[in-house]
Length: 490
Image 1 (tube, one colour):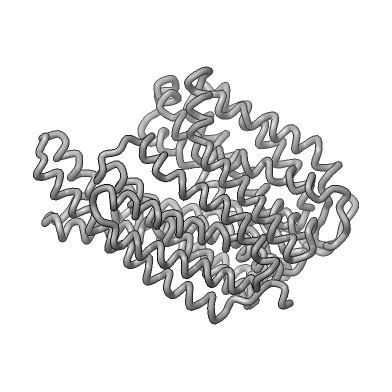
Image 2 (image 1 turned 90 degrees about the vertical axis):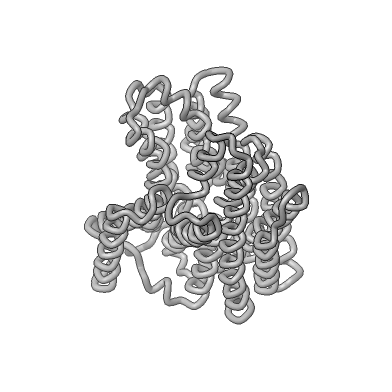
């Protein structure tokens, strides 16, 4: 295999970027498109409640659980080679899922697709830095890549709805086959190759420890959100943290570790990772309340709620490209700091959201500020992580950042969700239960007074969670102002 070092010219950088971005569009669609197809799938396949849960969640579990390992694998065996292999696996798994006749087939194929997706994304981000060695162009390319990913998230419900309505639920899987086949055929001709010169032998124990640790922690966080602080959730969290500790100690003693944790001791990587983790935490937590606020407090349908949230998706897409363009004229650290301040203002607006039409407009404004802020800052943060990492560890660094984002979202759902629930119970005067239970009771009884009480109690919980998010965001703003430096400084 020909090795291409960073900075080597690529015949067509834009074509290479487009080829890298296209699979990310599909991976993003697959994250949420199953929500649209799941009712039809459940009617045909008749899964048990546990099988239905795993059909929906296994993709995200495997993406979060294997990304660190797969990012390192790409650095070892070659990033282009990994993209080609995993695109082929993704296409095959998609085709099998489309004709699945049993729930377990969906679970297995979705798990395989999650692993393949976890491999493609960090390898693609690492290659972007290689294709565009100039820091400013690299940030712009990262913004374009992110725009494709966000577009996939935005159009997934629409695409899924059309496919399920006019064909059958298997069509949501089949649409991935031609995209991945194109990647397999074109990547060897368009993309450069890169791998570490002396990667050492892969450590299987480390890979198992990493996967088990992250899966247990993510499972525990999701269980706490869905069922509260049960013994099973706490046990999974403790076991996951224990295995994570063993994993970290093992990496520190291996000559060729699966993951080089010294990356986290590099100033640029550590700071950007903290910012990515904390912004994902507050964004993930408040998104839960935003959806319930629109549907439960204002009584909007899911479609109407989605329309009210469209401005935030548009703001993020525009910002993901406007931020890098602005970075050509203004110091990147100043842009990131300004974005964090904008996000802080957005969370303050969430915290003072009133009732009525003014509340809807305030929510939209807050969503635009927060999503626009992270949309403009994310390309700089990712570039800061990878530009401070050695060229042969860029994939590992990208996977670190993506995993921090996944864990941050899950942690935000637990932390802010728990705070909102505690305040809801105190305001509503109940020792247990959630606003979902309260809304169901009020609806079943057709009790307008009870419904108003539940809505006001929920809004109080929403405000408390938003003030907590604003406090965390203020800390992040201070971190960016004091510590973040532009990647071009080195």
